[in-house]
Image 1 (tube, rainbow, N blue to C red):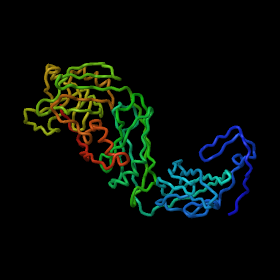
Image 2: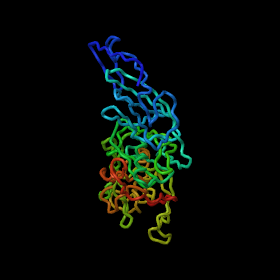
Image 3: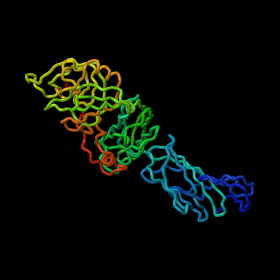
Image 4: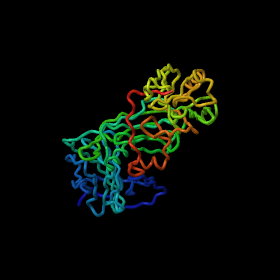
Length: 422
């Protein structure tokens, strides 16, 4: 097969630097690596089509992209394939340089540019750029992604969430989705996605986020085939930051809350927690929202109006930690018991001045931990963010990429009425 002449003379040189897929040298122009790369069209093919330099017909995105060296004297040294939005196609090059094939899926209805570098037996280098479009399926369903929470600054316990518009049940399809959902942080930390249910994923680090970190989530799923008639859709990128590490630890047996900022104690508050039959949940919870005023009624948590435990109270400085109605809040009616006894219906009560201080110092995503209560441990999902109560090993098992088949229970639907307890 004919192609442009190649310079075969080799002249010694004092320095030679070879970059991946390209040669750079300080030698004289007689060295083959200093010559202008020849046109490798005709020496390579992709998906069985000869590389004649013309724009190829549309190809099926369900099939891998394959670049092949057609000349036995030619080796492929590097392949770079990107779509119009700058997404790279991951691929694998054969050890002998005869073939390169993609290992990540192509997007449907996308335009790709492929740059191929070659080298012949004399060390002369060739280059060729190809372009092609992928076909668009006639029948397909899009999986859109919505990241959460909303942009802003949060405590170090705030998980990143991804809500899918369409359920994804198949393990292979989940792997495609999860690989396309990216979360990066500065400083970098080890983290993983966990499939909460068929439409919900949570991402958290092994430990809490670093203080004053920048966290960014984005999706590379658009146009990617996920499964039969199921394709990646739209997603808006998300950027979060974290503040100081604020952790409030309530010892239900000691009737005391100790608040730490960045590991240093900044306050200790006498409290009351849940009485027998209404014990406060143990474990790590995350601040969900803050409300200056909440009307709390026993009927919202199943207490009959004619019961001795019935209540209907105006509550101030209410910091919510579960969707079912557990708060840290002002409880002026129980000041005499705070620090001595547990008399609430599950919330952590404190004086109005202490509740105001707590309200002013915490933000969404901060950690509220309860220990030594007779209550059950906070569920990981379905009632707020109990993600940190799941051991890291088990968390990873809920990833389709790093841990195998998800085995976490599906979360209960978030309570629409957001009941309250005191």
